[in-house]
Length: 256
Image 1 (tube, rainbow, N blue to C red):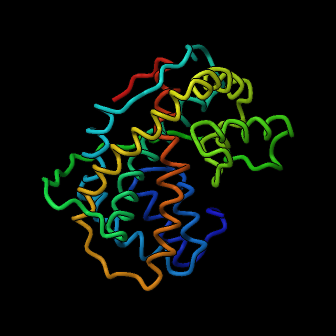
Image 2: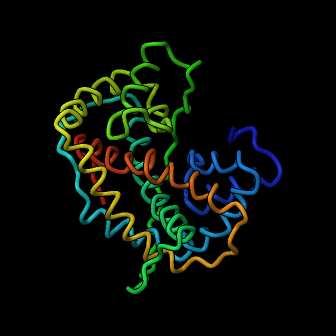
């Protein structure tokens, strides 16, 4: 859908890529683009947050305290692009979690009543070439089934959104198999889900503080927009910030 966008939506996607510092527009923005008026309104509301460095400051505080489930080692050589995908999603999912979490809190009237809004400095996103974002037609049936199994980790029994990170790693099915092997035990003992929920609560508190910086006209379809944003905050983004960080830690990647 991103490559097919035209007119205002294409312009907004380009602005998102430039402002957030990513080469691929994250799924949440692509989803909002399917809803009449949602993307222009939402992006106008949260772009000033990115420019002020508010999500960056929240990300730094979050990373300093977040709970990371301990996985078995994933160290070793992997196909080109694996670590680029992980680094890109680690940054973009987390930064988007705070901007969108703030938007959700603002829509719900759940902004923090006091506290200090701390800005920047902005952290540059990793400018890395990423492999193709695969669809079901691009991979064999076994790989797609693996992607769907991975998507259940850390989520509700029936996930509502397919996380894009796994699709971006479809070019490395052997790595995805290793990821499944190390995630299965922490999913089975409940530690993964507990970490996801604990980190979501921490992120919600930080987002409520940022929400006080939003200045926007209340949209007529506020409930519909809030539901769409909330799906990502609670599910795809809300779980993947924890899972991606855990995978990168298991690979021994340098984290900041």
